[in-house]
Image (cartoon, rainbow over all chains, first blue to last red; front, top):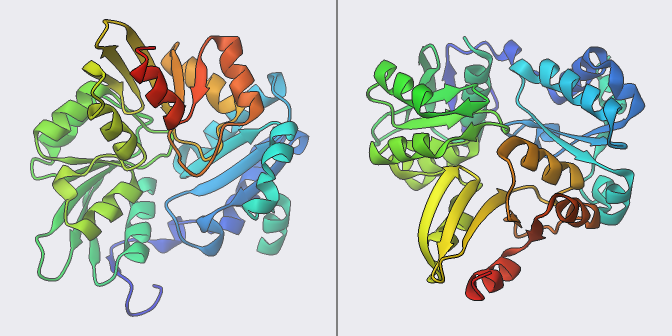
Amino acid sequence: MHGGEMGRIKGVTTKQVLTACEVADYLLKSCDSLCEFESFMFGSSLLGIGCDFDILIVGPAGEPLSRLKAELRQAGDELPLDVLYMLPDEVKETKFVTSRICIPLTQLAASED
Amino acid sequence: MNWQVNYAIENISQGLRNVTVEHVRDDAIRIVMPSKPDVIAVISAAYKIGIIEVVRYHEDFPNMDFLCGYRKLCIWEGEAIKYVEDKKIGWGSSGTLISAILKDEVNTAAHKDFYFAYRLIEQNRFITELDREFDRVFRVTLTNGNTLRVGMIMEYEPTADAIRTFWETFGPVDIAWNINPNGNPTQNAIEAGKDLGCMVVKWDELKELLRNRF
C-alpha cells in the first residue's frame, strides 16, 4: 500500500490496477489508429492517484477519428478512461498541452520498458 | 473481482485515511471507518444506469448506501436518479463517493459533477417546471410557458467534439451549458453548436436567457 496513514485494502489484487505507463503502453498496442493522432495523458493519474486515466487525443474530425473512438472504446472496456478529443486549432487556442502538462503516450510507454 | 471494483478499492484507499475497504461480493464493497457506520457501496461498470439496473442492484444489495457509476462516460437516466434519491441512496462517480464519505453524507450525495449546476436551476425563480431526463439533461418550463431542453457540459474546456458527441448521445438541445466554472468553450465548440442549432453558453448567459424567458 502507500504508507501507514492511507486506507487499507482487504482482498484486492493490486496487480489488476494498471499504472499510467502500463495504460499508455497498452493503448498504443491496442489502438492502431493512434499513430494517426497525437496522444497524451494528463491529470492526477500521472501521479499514481485519481479515479481514472485522462487521455487527450489531438487530430482532425472525420472517419479516422470515428475509427479511433471505436478502438479506444474497446480497449477501455475494462479501464477507467476519460478521453478528451481536440482539434489542432483547439489545442492552440487553449494551450491545453502545456497548461495541463500533458505527457505523450509514447513517452510514458517508453518509460515502462 | 470485477475490474472497476479493483480500481474503486484502490482509489478509495488512496483518497481516504484510516479506512478499510473490503470486497463484499460481485460489485459491492464495504468501507469501514472508525466511529462511523460502515458504508456499502455498489460499483457499477455500466455505460448507462437506468431504472432496471438500479432496481436490480437494490434487490441484490438492500442495504446499499451508495451506487457508483465508475466510468466517466456513465450516464444516469432521470428515473434511476429519482429512485435512488427517494430511497436515500447516494449516487454518482467515484469522486462523489469519496467526497460524500468525507462529508458524512453518503446516503444523500448526488453526482458532484452536476450537483451545483443543477441546484442553480432548481432555485431559479423563472422556472415553473423542471424535468431531469438524464444526469446532465433537463427540460425547463419558464414562467411565460416557453420550454427549453438544456444539456450540462462538464468538460473543463468543451470542444467541438464534446458538443457533437453530446448531441449524438442525448439528442437535440436548445442550450449546451458549460457548467465547469474554470474553463470556457472553444470557438470551434461554439461554431459546432451553431451548426447543430444550439447555443453553447456559460452560467451568466444562461441566467440572462432564463430571466428574459428565452
